[in-house]
Length: 270
Image (tube, rainbow, N blue to C red; front, side, top):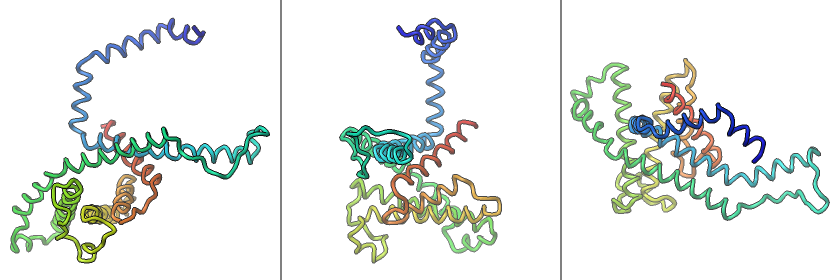
């Protein structure tokens, strides 16, 4: 047994910490609290897990390149020596099969959780229908939108109602709950476009409305300074609202994780 291991085992602090940890794991109240937290903050938990997964995927995918780049820089600045039979060339190393496998696993995890979050929002359309029937289903009611606050409330309702409809259609089509020729709500030029499926276009439409909302919120808060999370939401929603994506995979993963992490940290501090 090494000297370090001997010290750790004989240390009263180490033994006490282990006993406390064991008691913690055997306390049913701990699991009740964890369950309550996850139940009450399910979407936030999914958010941090989802973006952690995509970040890990990108770290694994880029690890050989980063390692190679650092080695090249160290060699050029003569901070490391290379044996005569070694080479530091410009060719980037390829992912091993194991690295490729785990990168794909974590990326698939991101996609799976994304589907779960969208599926949970399928029934989110009902509150918007209720609001429409109570406040906006007649010309007389629409005429009552005569103040800035009422106009803002109506705009909020309209944007998120349309966003929810398009997102739900995208989800239902992508999972074959609706026939893939359901393109009646698409613009004529997008119906003819074979580059994206109807499902993809509905997702793009939904994200464009979300991006519009984020842009309105950013403009509204300009005097007070733009919030970090709101800015991240704007960037991410703009990324999704384009047909090819505005960000590369790594930038998307970093911004998404930073956004979800700061939100989750704030939630833990409440």
